[in-house]
Image 1 (tube, rainbow, N blue to C red):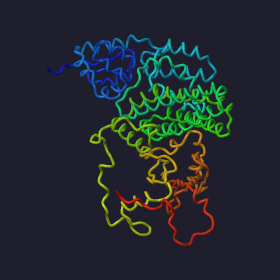
Image 2 (tube, rainbow, N blue to C red):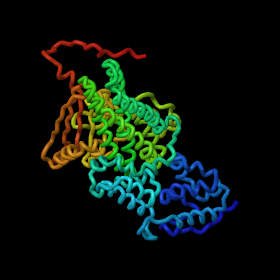
Image 3 (cartoon, one colour):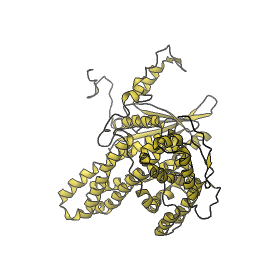
Image 4 (cartoon, rainbow, N blue to C red):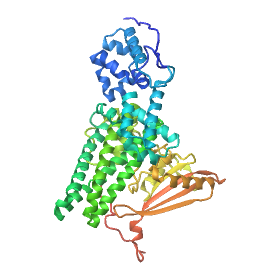
Length: 505
């Protein structure tokens, strides 16, 4: 059948011109309300209700191809879509020529602003239902970024985050659960969320009935739950070190900042529970457990209703494969992914399949020459963890050492260092960079004890060229527990236990 030329159709309510070559992804990005219209036209279009399909197939499927698949005349399809757009009511006061997506965001922003100013939650819900009716993860992301750009502190958005979700929950609940194949990062994260939900439920139950249990029974159950907290921490670290950097590549930063701040609130709550348990403070545990349980459950909801669909609509297949490789490096809380994904042959840019760099005569250094292979081996075997941030505040390097102090994955490369820290630490990080850049300081130093009782030493050094110009910053982190415990002298060779290499095999 020859190609049928159809004139473009301009919908009355949008500046977008619909043509046979418009993709479904572009159409739904401008007019998310058309999802119902499309799926009602043909049973074959029901697949579009799956967010995975919208994030993959819809990116390349044009309306011409959609008409063919659904057995519909292309001209009728274009006319139906145009009529549906024109018939959708505009928010009060909106002009006919305005971008409908921007109109929705303005209305949504006004509703959320009213909550920030002390407005009634039920009234906000009613206005949302009357004027908007539904909301996408992308709109929530854009809303949070707009509020941050307008000067609303991340801490304030974080504090009222549950109010936001409360106002939008009815709309979010109507969205189908996001599905992904076994081995996909979303499939793995969802499986871990089921475990986190169970931990939250057990926390809440133990908090309610703590006083009814014997001391031994309470301690056994509380210690079993506390043992799961580090697994939850791994779940959050993967989001912070893999999901958030990849979303930032696409200009999406608001949800990451807010979600990271909530992570830190949950960490603080779990730390309080650990402390109460160590002190034998059963009443303190019982008092804190319900709030911690609610926070864990709410984070699961926000992930699955906001983060997952947002990531599916944003990340490319290559980025999902990159995300999976980084998660494999960081590790998993409970069980590894259910399958290899994608298959080994399909993995783009798999480092394991790349040939090693050739050994050359070496690169000239200030003193001596080293090959690229030798440089890489030296950094890998250093007993300290090193990261380098350039003069533009972008992470350019970290050494992959077995002496790991902080989690790192390749997604951090190219990321603004300000986004690599939780929002509460940002003022301190920015102060260090500003002092280094201004030439007022060259070193910043910290030391602390982690939850495992290891003593950590972290130092930041300004990097300057021969003319004194600021070229970046080096972070050096080291576990110095063993060094601090040294006493006396050792002047003769003495092998430490456990230091010998295992025979190859």
